[in-house]
Length: 113
Length: 111
Image (cartoon, rainbow over all chains, first blue to last red; front, top):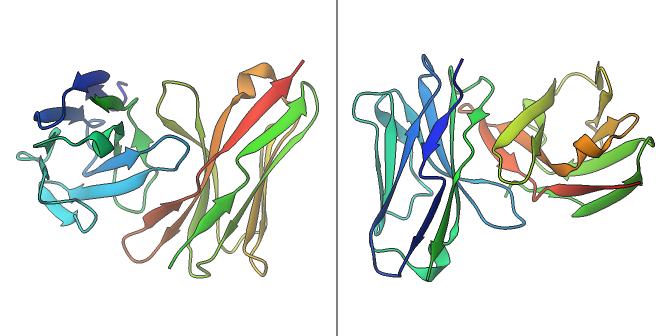
């Protein structure tokens, strides 16, 4: 069974440019998470989806970050415009439900120059 | 607010036992988790313990939970080079099972 798929694995952009990350969760997983992980730190939740509904986006900086999961399957996280401080690893995870084990993708490492 | 703390590094000799410690502040946590992260890879769930348990054993892994002291530990018996990774402690809290993460402990294996 395929795990959580993320692309791209690496992205280097200049500040003020837009960037988008894609995640395909494990088939049948209703809950999808986007996390941000800075070096030497644990993941920080950005947004959690139950099917196509964003049920927790309280930590998402909505001035520049947006996310969508239109059909309740794959999801896209966008940053526009990117800032130097956005350099981090963006992790996607999925689970059957909110109280189930989260399975993580390999992440997208973003470098903003 | 909620907080989970871990030591940043642990160095052990190959074949010895590793004990990684974690403290947390929220006494209402339901589950406590240990995740492993290898370089360039995503987080992998190693094991978890329900908050009403005090011990769980799974092959080389032993999890101990001291709920009174809000202390969680992960013991890895017969540590191997393949155990080199960063180990994250996390607790799930609230009705939506939000995960609160520690900063991770880097396990270094000496030959």
